[in-house]
Image 1 (cartoon, rainbow, N blue to C red):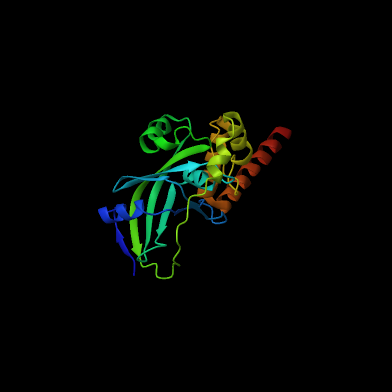
Image 2: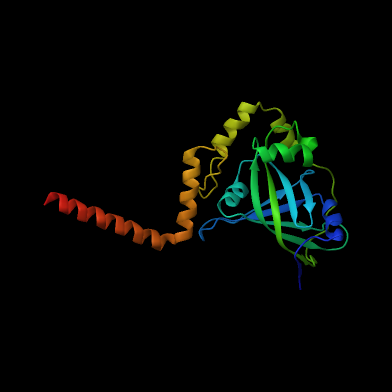
Length: 228
């Protein structure tokens, strides 16, 4: 039976800092959208307070977490004990995205991740305000021995020029797999697309059909009035 708490205690924080791997989960509002979970490594997780955490988002082929957070803010972290006593710790959060180049990003990067200040490919810093945490047994999680961190991703982006990274974001990270705009480009089009996606998911397909039908009906009536 899991136990629930409103924030991280000292023991939670100490244990989290010892972990080499964590998972990030998010989902779009629409029921047909795909739920995403991503594994994260490196020294990329920070505890800012018992109620606030953050992690460094390094570029990848997908951009699910960012698009979901921009749409609805729902974010879950999960840590598992692969060594020692079994344990699973989940953090349910309200997440926010601070993209590379934003004022908040420029403040947080040297403060939280100074070792990544010159690392290419860093896409954003994601902050989670903790709503609730849960602690469960993890008896079924297998035991693994940590060997080393993979350097492939950091080396890959370290060889890219800034303009190449920007081009990659535009080509590969413009939308989620469900078509939600990432807002990496702060254009009016991107902002409008995001608002339309949020509105579409909030009103639902039936309401949209009724609205579309009403618009068509009004248009037909106006057209008939003009022809008379």
